[in-house]
Length: 94
Image: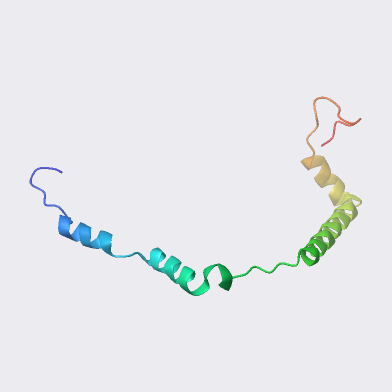
């Protein structure tokens, strides 16, 4: 501490602040008290979510295939492709 300066917090104030629970501690306490391991249950229908994901993936793939057939898609492909130095699987395109 520089000479001639007074401390902003006294040791008593620091101890008092340290003893007070913080808001996050109170939130965790309330969560554990009221919900606990049995109060909050995650219910996920995996088959339903996987079906939605596969539908979205197929739709995106179909749109990309249609876009490739347009002149704009061909121009975008030429701009976005990075040529490989060595051919892989018979092609230099990525």
